[in-house]
Image 1 (cartoon, rainbow, N blue to C red):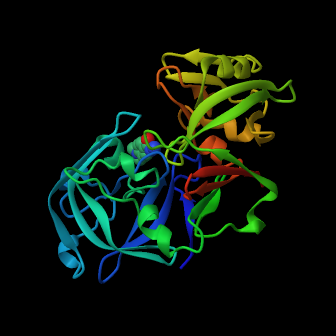
Image 2 (cartoon, rainbow, N blue to C red):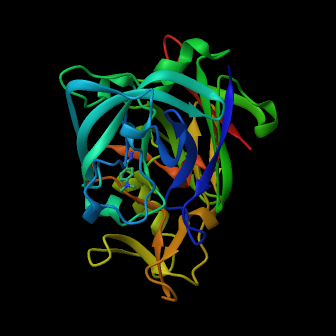
Image 3 (tube, rainbow, N blue to C red):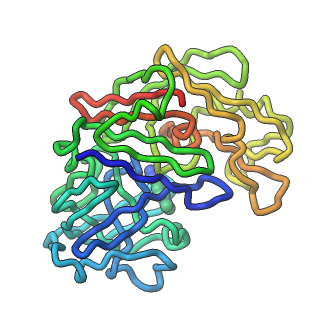
Length: 331
Ligand SMILES: CN(C)c1ccc(C(=O)NN)cc1
């Protein structure tokens, strides 16, 4: 059975993250989760999360679900690239998103969450859509929702149609031709260690010349911004009056009144252009004349990340066939 679900920005001012409604258990408990191609744990705020760490999030209570089963002796603990993290134990239960149901999905209940999760009341947990090899459950790693659902889908794919300051969609099992223009360009995916890793064929700043390059990076719906090699972001921000790489603010900032160029990245023989408006990410604080860039250096990360700032400029196909591939189309 195929499915489709909304990807809703959690903040109307800037696209920090997107959440998608899911139901867990019997009777169904509805939570809004962050679908994250950059990780592979499905975890939720729960009745096991200390009250001091819950601030408005909806929680999953396995003790109120007649279909919940404790996965005895199993625990999990995850650390994300931004230093946030969570840990806890594991149940299996019915899990439905957009009409696609997996019975006996591993649902990881949080017994600890870091402050950046506590502080974001609109995110009630994550649904990892990376490869199951990255799942942190010990002693036996668990399958992602997509890996569990794959065999029931018409096609082993899901697509991301994220939008700038608007609601987009995740589709499961089919490719909606009305959501993109032109052709989809498919690229090989390196599945080791478990991210959707692909190689971009280069970049251009604004209307400037295209620079052929091999930029290896991950497609990560769970990361807000896009992090690329220093030489790429230096050439981009070099075109913006007053832009500086600020230690104080932790990245490239610029005068909000500056005119930004677009940014184009190569996908095989094709390319995707990120409009300047997407790169004018947010004011440092409400009303500030200083703005934070949506394109930042990956130098300190050790990996290039094509996050939401890039993904929302395209229609992206995550093809879970063997071998997996990733498809990019304009829209
Ligand atoms: C604190 N929150 C909501 C996070 C959500 C997702 C991630 C992440 O690295 N996903 N790939 C980090 C942090």
